[in-house]
Amino acid sequence: IAKLFLCILIDMLGSANEAIPIVGEVVDVVYAPIAALLLRQLFSGSNVVLLLEFLEEILPFTDILPLATICWVVESFFADGRLAQTLRIGEFANGSPPVDTVAESTSRDYANVERKGNGDIVDAEIERTMLQLKSKEKDG
Image 1 (cartoon, rainbow, N blue to C red):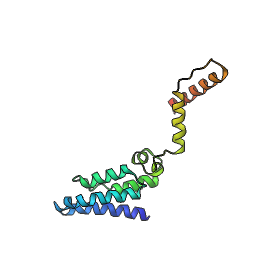
Image 2: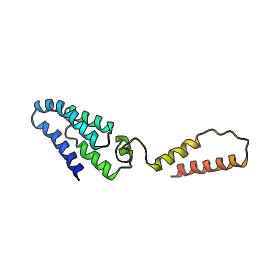
Image 3: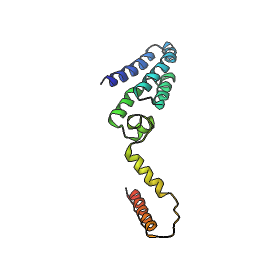
């Protein structure tokens, strides 16, 4: 819950800069890198989050977007989803995909490997298994 509080605080401070026209945008020049580095630390060194937060704070009229809180929600409730993968947070924080994703990509890569053999029983069994996997991917 402390992480959520920090995320909300970061978002509120970023939005508060907009209260004073012109001055708020100048303050954003100082606040943008600080907020971006804080979020990077909070979300396991994600450079994607760092870049998005920096751009959100530095670009005019984007401060209203609660990026830190959105990242917390994604990490807390959708840690294994595509958005977490894109943001490099949750189960994808260290750049490694979850075990299920590794298994799926390995079977897909294996199915695309060109095999050369003499038509023995092992090659036939491998071919049959690969066709079954392809059929399941199409159906699923």
